[in-house]
Each structure stands twice: as structure tokens, then as C-alpha cells.
Length: 354
Image (cartoon, rainbow, N blue to C red; front, side):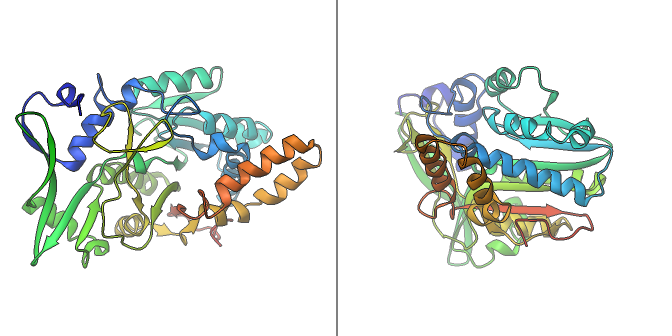
């Protein structure tokens, strides 16, 4: 709580998403502007760092998708929020084993944080990658967007229905800079926007990703313009949970969301039912939403692990299968992480979603 004055200079009432957008992305003091959140010395780890086979399976899936498009000569691959660059590095190292694909592909990284860009540039030194602030440079060829834990880091609005009226949750910063949640009547504009989506019609409490929708629109518009798709992997839910999903971690442990502001990660669960709803609203085709475990198993991760393990000693095998457990088991990431693929192309249902 002591850091609140860095972000807000005077008492005020701020919507939940605007508050955490400031905390996470403020250019001077924001979490993603000042911290390296990844790895043992950071606050959390992601699947590409836990198990190298995660990235390899994504790479093979991408190549399979390119083949289903009849191997276009120009193929644009955009990673959304590439974090520490580990996934991109694994993708490219795998792609180099398929020279025809590698030659046809432009590699783009869509990153907001200057600090994370610098981390990515060190990790990917010498690779043919281009960093983007928007998608205007991508103007020909097919396009595929990939996002692993991208939308969970985009702050959400929170709304509550009481006696038929809609209220938005705000964070009130008091004169002594203490903080409390309050409810205010939702704006006419917000109410009108929410009514567009069937996901929220009967919900008494729900999270609405207004900042996320701005990103979804850019992605959907580019897919509709050039043809292609988007695959998103994130932790989230399909059935409405009717509660706040805001959560914070610091040093790999749960943290009160108002503690260590600007020095701890704050995320929310991704509403995959809404993602499907939104993309259908944009006239795109959505494959069956599957769990991370289902997707990776269907793409052959266990078979690949068996092949690799034949040339490993006991310690290496143990490390491999423990890492697989973390990304596949329902007690860890296997079930809570979901995978959605959306496209506008005439192709067979891609592997992993059949």
C-alpha cells in the first residue's frame, strides 16, 4: 500500500481495470516496466520455461497449420506478449529444421513493455524477428497470432447486477491513501457494450475485458483482412464463475492484490466463453475449446517425450517427466489452462482441436 502515491497523486475513484492498468503498465513505475517477472528469481514461471517440449509442440502445430493453408509463400507469425522470449526462441530453433517453412515466415513480436523488449532482444539476439507496436506493417500474406498467457495480464472491469440495475466496481483512494472497493452505477456506454454479448446476460457478477476487447478487435480485423487465425493459451474458465478472479503473486507465492503495488504481478482468469462469443460476433470460426493437457497430448507430446527419453539417463528422464506433469496434470496447469483456436479459412479441423 505504501507505493500507491507513485501511481495516484490525489484521492480519487478509479475503475478496477484502469487502476491495475496503471499499476502494471505505467511507464515509470509499472510492474512490467520495472520488473523481470520470470523464472526462479522472479514471480512466476510459464509453460515454455517449465518444459521445452511445450514450445516444440506449438511449433509443430504451427507448421501443420501452414501446410493446411497449402504452404503460402508469405506467412506472418505474431507472438502476443512474448514475455522473456523463451517460447519464440524454441519456435525458431524448431522451425529451422523445416527450411521451406522458415524461409516463408516473418516472425513478429507484439510487446508493450520496453523492459521486456530488452530482455527478449538479448534472448533472441541474431534471430530474424521484428518487434511491433501495432499490426500495420503486416499487410500481405496469411497471418497467425499466438498468445501464451497474454490475456490474463490485461486488466478487466468488474460489474454487479442488483435489482435489475448494473453497477461497476471502482477502487476508491481515500485522503489518507488507503484503498477500498466501491460500487457506482454503470455508464450508459458500458451497459450498451455489455448487452452485445450473450455471455453476460444472466450474470449477477462478471468481469468485462474492455482493454482486452481493444486487442481482440485489432487481431480479428487483421485476420479478416488477410486470412489466418489466432491461437490463445491461458488459464481461465468456460462456465461463468460469478466472483472476482483477480489474483496477485510475488516470489511464486500468493499476494494480497493491494500489497507490493508495482512490484507484484496481478492477473485475472480468462473467460473463454466470452472469447468465443466475441470472435463469433466478428464472424470468425471457433474450434472446440480444449484444455492444455488435451491439446498437447493430441499434438503428440507424450510420444515425443518417449522418443527423447530413450537417450537420457535416469536423472534427465526424471526431470523431463516431472516437467511434463506440471504442464499436463489436472492438479497443475493441465486443466485450468485452456486453448482456443479461431480462424476464417477453409481447412480441416486442426490437430489438437479435433
